[in-house]
Image (cartoon, rainbow over all chains, first blue to last red):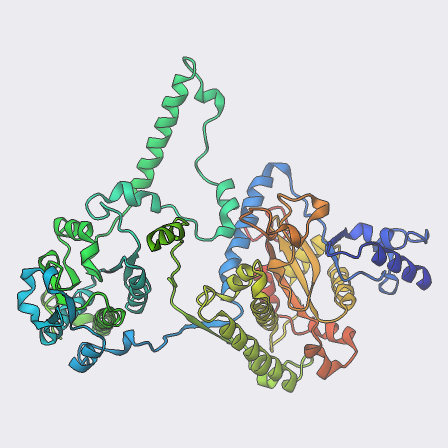
Length: 378
Length: 257
């Protein structure tokens, strides 16, 4: 008996020496392995000691649960829903994750501890060629040297502090800050600044009309797939069902089908757009306003204040709070974006503190207090 | 001359490559019991302490080190496993992440306050495996059949069907079976994954119970006696956690509605 079992096992293991998965059901295990001995009946009759040796690659399926056809589809849905509900617990299993803040030069400076020496070391004072200047920048220019204009760093410091104060107060009052970096070098900086201050970023191309014509541009972004592993299930059980050919082609020829399609499309868009909410940012921080003229024009029309790094060849009137600085030096832009990110984060932290205190002093908040807290009191 | 060269180079569209998620750091998750005091009679205090405070920490340190600076930095461990399993250059990351996940899943299935087997779990499993004792036999045979290191699982597929299976070394149930949707059933293999443009390269399996059959788990306490190790495992399983993971079908006798 034992010899026949071992022989059977050796035979099967020699036969399938690949990475194939061998799938066996409960009822077939015994008959496959012990084809030489006929005294075996069903595996259920066997005791533990007579259970055949299994290959490690085997998967043993349990019996499929009995299910009436009437409720099969609903049952499928319920089971999938239950399994999907387990997914967040599996994502949380394995480890506990905490944010990792790497000390970078970008986040090293705050508007309170930035020095003129470090600004000069980053090359913030180097403007463009004197022949390319925009005369509106005259107040910010210190002088001329080696054919380029030198930016007055005291003006830069004042402007940076002004902009940081504004960003802080926008965040303090619960506003949305948008960091925009379209140049290749500025992209990661805009992302890091936004992630540090829990705000938002736009990199790459700014879609013209995002602020003035949001619905057709942003409407498509409402539907998104949270997890690509759920794609097939989402498609299978989606609410929207295409009309059957019969009801679509009812009436004269095929023209009614086209009209039907348009009707369905309109109804679906209406339903989706009725739930669509687009938000305007309360502050846009442009790291290179020279290349974002469309965006700045839109923000002017949409009444969104902007902060921008203006070099000597850039018109400072395009942004609300210009920061005269060298836009070609990566270090300079990283310091500016870092200072503004830290200011926005400070504002958010102060807002959280204020709200936490408000919850603590629950009974003391009155309408007068609520309205007066709108002024910045820091 | 230089203009033409740059034009030729820029004709290939380059995707935006940015780290758009904040970097995250993995640490061992908190267990509902103290691993330093062990789980009698299953695992002694020194061996459980080793598994959690040394082995799990080593695995997660490796995951942190290997995912640093890449797009896996901010992903949760399960997503690290499923996404890096498709990349042949990230085998080390897959193995470490998978072993860490499996270990944590295994330790969370255990409890230091064992209760008797719950009726709903017994009935649910008896529905699929004739009796609960039969299921335990099958599980033991599967676990003993593993040569080398590995894990033995009770998994459910997406139609709710339960099965007992093994994964080798650091294999994860999420990446154990390739998807058979676009492949011929007889030729389902890992070599075919890269060639099929499929959104779901793996069959989705939901693990319910996992047992570590790694030598590091049973060798200190049981030496070569794996049968006792498996038998004692059933004594410390947290049945309420298991019943949360088991799905109930409408027509089953213990549906909660």
